[in-house]
Amino acid sequence: MNKFEQLGLSESLLKAILDLGFENPTDVQEKAIPLLLEKDTDLVALAQTGTGKTAAFGFPVIQKIDADNRNTQALILSPTRELCLQITNELKNYSKYEKGINVVAVYGGASITEQARDIKRGAQIIVATPGRMQDMINRGLVNITQINYCILDEADEMLNMGFYEDIVNILSTTPDSKSTWLFSATMPAEVARIGKQFMTDPVEITVGAKNSGSATVSHEFYLVNARDRYEALKRLADSNPDIFSVVFCRTKRDTQAVAEKLVEDGYSAAALHGDLSQAQRDGVMKSFRGRQIQMLVATDVAARGIDVDNITHVVNYQLPDEIETYNHRSGRTGRAGKLGTSIVIVTKSELRKISSIERIIKQKFEEKTIPSGIEICEIQLLHLATKIKDTEVDHEIDNYLPAINNVLEDLSKEELIKKIVSVEFNRFINYYKKNRDISTQSGDRRERDSAPREGGNAGGATRYFVNIGSRDNFDWMSLKDYLKETLDLGRDDVFKVDVKEGFSFFNTDPEHTDKVMEVLNNVQLEGRRINVEISKNDGGGRRDHNGRSSGGGFGGGRSSAPRREGNFAPRREGSGGGGFRSDRNSAPREGGFGGRSAAPRREGGFSDRAPRSEGSSDRAPRRSESFGDSPRPRRPRRD
Image 1 (cartoon, one colour):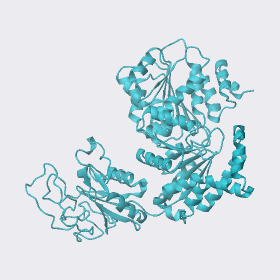
Image 2 (cartoon, helix red, strand yellow):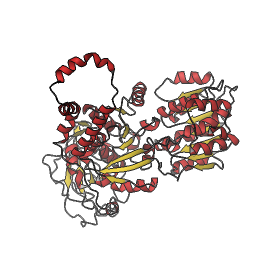
Image 3 (cartoon, helix red, strand yellow):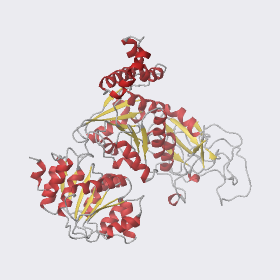
Image 4 (cartoon, one colour):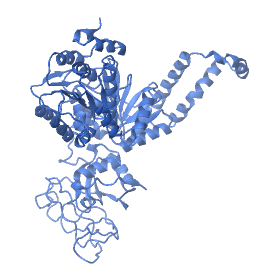
């Protein structure tokens, strides 16, 4: 007997379930479906990605819809267009034997006019992304004032993507009498706030511990130097010949760059990110589902719609900025009761994040070392031998065997095996025999995790002077984001950021020094070359409310940033003074007085005044007047 029959579902739904091959409901389905069918109630369901949440709300909402009423009765909000389309297709499969039920997907990147036309024809269920839904409400193209059900799928991810205001506005348009069903993997504060504002005495269902990871996913981390991150990814792929994986990067630029490198190096890979058109994204996902792509390199946002069976590995090429996002990533594998592996490639400065993730998912990571070249060659050799052994013979080659036998007749069995294997295997031997071992050891993680960081002792960090500041529309937060993206570093790798008018200071761990100097000194920002130098001031001293350093005494000498000849402080447009003065003093003193800016000359004149301190260091440095209304700094181009 199919266990779905015990949940109270209609015959037409049970027939569709049989066609889909579902046999046993998942935990969240078993808990949610009878509850939602029994009565109209608000519901909060916490369950990991890949636990069958779509069916948990999909079956009840279809059964409760009045197919004879063409008005919109249910709205489902999801974070991305991929997930929106996926939910729509699944609901259509569930309702294939329900006459008259129409499900319409509403998302960006497609014609809003056509979507509005589909809704006007009669759509009892709308599946939408928040941004496009808000747009349609503003244009008067949709009416959700009489809906009976509102479902928030992947609520935590929608809020993490910045849709809080859109969701609040959309929910405010719906009637108070509706039932709201909120499905989420985690319960951050913003999700709880939505529940408190728009739900009445919701029933809560939790599958597993709150915010915990899936029991079918094992977690591993590999410690490498930052410069070896890509090499580590290649070795992990080579040591898992049957890998079918999603590789996560933080930015669209990194996603595209890593995918291109993998393709150049002979791997079947492709990128999935927001800069692709809908047609390109559909093509990539079709190839991935068909396994023509073995490694899909994706951003967190784009990957929200990935629901592909049998993904063997999730690879965190870079850890996410928000630790909670790790749960969503790892949920791409280990689905439907199958086992999966979540791999994290980390540097020493990111080790503290591993402990933070362990506390959230309530599971331990296993530290492993990157396989050596010899180990990879052995794995590949055995994999090739197995592949040859299991290959089915196509007897169409029989006609060619006499000619082949003539060519190979002088070879013994051993020689023939060696040559056949070498055809495929030589590239691994030739590559790895000349490559060094890149594995490194973490030492005592607890000691590393407790190391002081931002706001405390610099702990041997390297302090830098850089010739960009608030004049370039940066505050400390946006400069930190800009640096970590440009340098391909984690959010915690850049710290003690101090922004002045024409220059700034920041810290990294010493292991990143070479990379910082090499990358930033070859970057231009809006046509001006960035210049970065190492400062001997570690930035650890506190300042009083006048900006005086308590670590070095009042007026305690000039900054130790190296002096550069012929530099001038650029004048801000509209600033006082009509002449040009050369910089007679050395580089600026961090947080002090009297030193003139050492920022390089820009077109448009020079300042006759020294840059002003941004004030007390125990407050966030002020933004420039225009920063809040202006776009983020233009992405740099490499020389």
